[in-house]
Image 1 (tube, protein in one colour):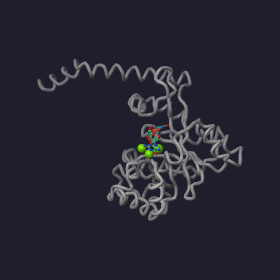
Image 2 (tube, protein in one colour):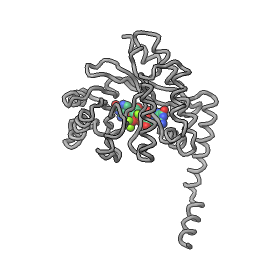
Image 3 (cartoon, rainbow, N blue to C red):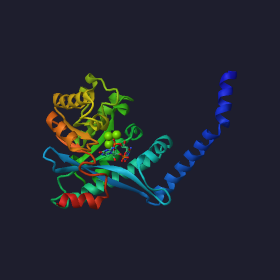
Image 4 (cartoon, rainbow, N blue to C red):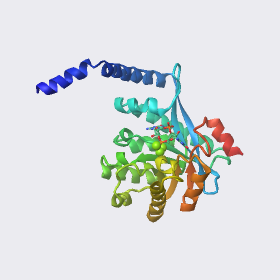
Length: 276
Ligand code: C2E
Ligand code: MG
Ligand code: MG
Ligand code: MG
């Protein structure tokens, strides 16, 4: 007990820990203020099909901070998760994405595009998660079939039965599901088959050094083969070079996302790309 108390005491008076706690609280307050002041924006990263045509985009959150500039999720998502602020933030992302889809439906240049959004574990476990998605679709008039929800392996493990049930309920409406960062989590293959998924998304770590690392080559290739075995689609993220893209094409990968085709960009730029 003395040991535990000692540890606690040290922790309490550790100046760097205290600084972090303060910083954490500051970031949390800042996020609240930022939501109130409409500082959050969505950026859109193009997703290309096998013949490298634009097929959709992933919406990625950015924070247009008054002093920090444009902040990527790495600078605030973990605080948002820990404080629960990811719930109102995620709700805003969902509603904004649906509004964009409804807007895209107005023009033949963009009507066929899909839009993927990232869902956090804390959103998914909400009892009314399914209702939230359906009502966002309903209020915006967006086509559910164009909305893709990205989940990660780790969040599915919380309550597999509950997750599967929610996925089924949303799929009835046409919503699709992609398993993000695939290959970095703990999915067992048998349980992967139980999940009503539409797509596996190969993690960028397996794409990054495709040309150099023989074992990573095998992983990317194995994931493509796995997706085909499950009869679902597969997309690679973090595609930066022509060599990586060619290797993926040779494996039978059907879709690509990465700097080779475009960085996350403001909505107008993605729409301009679709118009070309
Ligand atoms: P993610 O969903 O795996 O998104 C892919 C990340 O890789 C993005 O980082 C993207 O900018 C980056 N990326 C894309 N192509 C390339 C490439 O060719 N090379 C390299 N090196 N990186 C590439 P970003 O935008 O910083 O987002 C980081 C993570 O934050 C996302 O990873 C996602 O997990 C999370 N996130 C983003 N937006 C949201 C959101 O609205 N809600 C939630 N819950 N999480 C979000
Ligand atoms: Mg993602
Ligand atoms: Mg990813
Ligand atoms: Mg990632």
